[in-house]
Length: 581
Image (cartoon, rainbow, N blue to C red; front, side):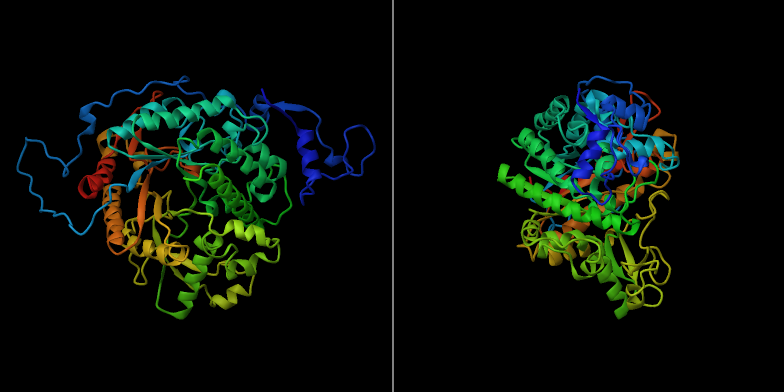
């Protein structure tokens, strides 16, 4: 079993001259020290010790060995009305809905479903997995998760992945996007490789291929190894760049012969703005709170660009990108005023533009972000800019929704010049209602207040991506790598039939697919889409209290049975009707 010493952590931090370093006068050999509070511990911790001392007990699942896939009964593959009507009773009347003959998905358009390791795998301590920051957040930070749940078991995908892949394949799904657990492959984030984890992910990939499902792999989906967070601050430190690159070097080498599509990092704007992490649960660092997300962003751009360049050298035919975030979706000016237009541009600059402008346009931050960060971040070197620019083979966006933006109280300039302004540094306010007070679209579950069914704006959103980042970089293809909807109050329902019929999510997928078809017919090069999520799972700080799945999972049953929801059939139907055969 891999081992690590806390003193080794401290020594590395000091040697790397971190801002948050251990005082050089701190010793463990009995000599005097100027600050005894900063003495480093000499004791040794293995993976089990880390769980016991830093996280605590975890729950085990009903299944603790890999189970074989169960054939999906034909009765489970019958779609709901109005897609299908039984012979009896008859008499239902519905208006004729004709196919739009100007729309089509090409044969090679990839469509599928997505999930993430921490949200679906479970098996928290199994087979040598090391803890991540989220294990601490869910186990030790009181009230951090809405329903006080953990992801110790969640969908138990670690043992049930064969059945999960068989179930999506039975509905004709062509693509499965999943993430790897960094701390399962490297329990301490670096050092020895956990070969059991390698074997596990090898079998997931092979099972996908067995069922003619294309595997797409995300290298990092928010679950930072705890050892790296407590060593140097995780993404707050550029030290993570080399550790990330060495992790992906192993992954590319082991899986790159069968995986063509890779996403380096999922939604950096989301996990970077989760900094600062709750105080007193992780090693303390001295970067001011308001700067931490941008230190994270700097590390992300460096790590992504190096991982991209490495991947292209090892797998020349691969397709590699990072996934842009859902934050704000399409940004609609509330009014046609010049001030609202300026606010909208700043919203783009500090959301998608924060990462997209360096990767797809210039190799460096846009002027708004650069003005803000130049007082506390070092500038990128010329070689770093060259590596960052063009480090994406497609423009991937997790595009869930849209909303309105407008100038803050007092105007944009007053906000930009006042660091104490509540809207600083973005200096754009937002809402989900038109100026006349009507909602942009039906609201999702109250625990997902950021999400509304705003599918009317999807074509314009896709055109904006094309015109702003994809075309200037050489007409790169666009992919919608996550989109989905949280049916209101679904987690509170108890009757299975009620749960499986999810009418707003059904209309969301139907209208979203029509929106993509509309944009494609107008010249936007969309090459694929991935629905979130293949089933209900652990939704981060909302736990199991909000549901995004196209399959229901009965979390009260220890065997965790799965059931298709009506929305899954609605999503599939778009391709039955419009994809070229």
